Length: 106
Image (cartoon, rainbow, N blue to C red; front, top):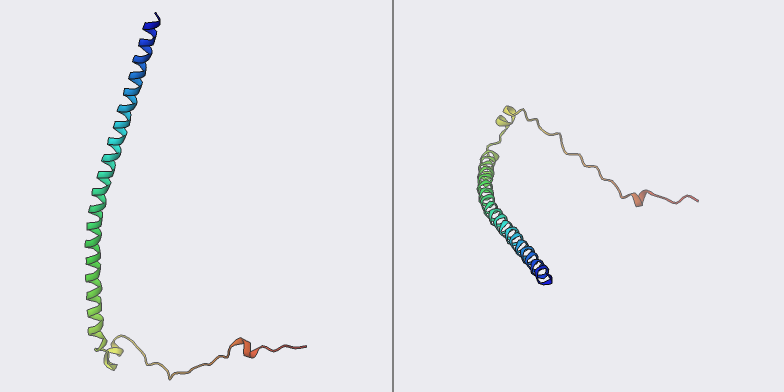
């Protein structure tokens, strides 16, 4: 009888160990697949980002080219077209530091 009980205990222990090993293997396989998929997704997102950056660089280059083309194009006639007005003569205001204006009254 004692032999039978010890045999059943060993059998249950073996099943438990096998179940733990299978579960651990399934978890490791799932994590492996997750990281493989995430790596592929990151590569695809990076490629899309590079394409988006190149598109924005193209837009910026076009805007810069247009700006430089219009920079030399500004004249009094074009200023009137854009409703620009002449700036009044420059007037500068000079402010002394606060420490020069403060006095100690006793």
